[in-house]
Length: 350
Ligand code: DAH
Image 1 (cartoon, rainbow, N blue to C red):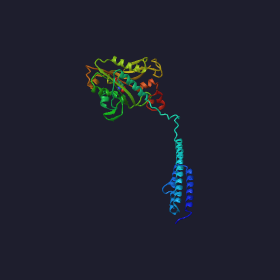
Image 2: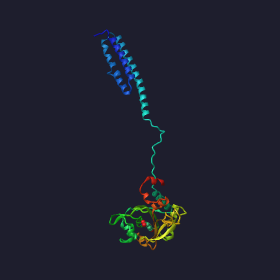
Image 3: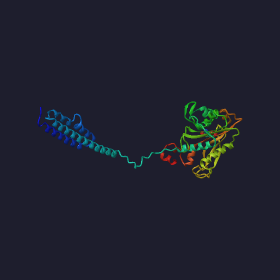
Image 4: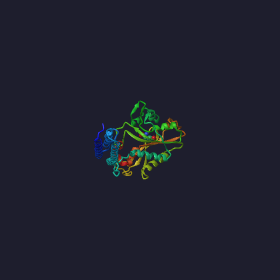
């Protein structure tokens, strides 16, 4: 089996494979192509290893050494070339990726639209702060209320004509969406002993044909003070102070006699018109005054219904309309704008 020309043939093959490998390595245009070349030329089953099978046909140890050395030299050279190329391609691929995924940190960001409080909520928070500073605690009542609390215990008997002014949405015959925050007066008196000083902010509901100054869903802030020797002067002083702290000291406040079943005497609270200062103009319908809410001395029957002895205690109560406050301070001509959620309108009050 000794073949005299085998060594020449083998060396020629090694040389050819070496050249082919180097060529393939430099032609590999990415790392996965390069890996294919590595397997083909240097792996265990590579063509270069296959050349070694020629060994038994060689004539001498010298020839075997010569072939072994040639194969090894070729291998080393190929491996070095593979490594160089691998580094080069890796760097190139990394650069390409960095370029493709580049983030330009100098670009302005996408602006996040910031929310803010609804103007009526701003009003509520300010009024609540003012009352807090004057010693009032904040409590809440349920929006779905018993007819008993919303009307009967507040001295509106079942067929009382004053109910007509506050028709509402009934859940059952004796349960309804509250028309006022006043039922909380009864709840509070039944839970706390005098002295009582609370406000009750919240939503109320009425079956109302909506217009520029009436909504079927609106806010109220109820107030109740019960103690010994509470007088109408306390009521006037308290509400005048609140209204002037909110609108400014130059605003006039007026108490106009009115009727509510749960207070006696009763009044409506007016503020002097912003546009004319009280002289009378188109904004106030010639009146010079705008209405902010109702108030009065708590009726003895209501005190009794709350478990408070009217012989010992007296109290005043009031119900303010924060939507009205907002309207007047913001020069808003139609209350419905406050409920429509149109950002172009609302953001003016930010
Ligand atoms: N609850 C009344 C309404 O919604 C407003 C009101 C008037 C509340 C007089 C009071 C009050 O506490 O004393 O029309």
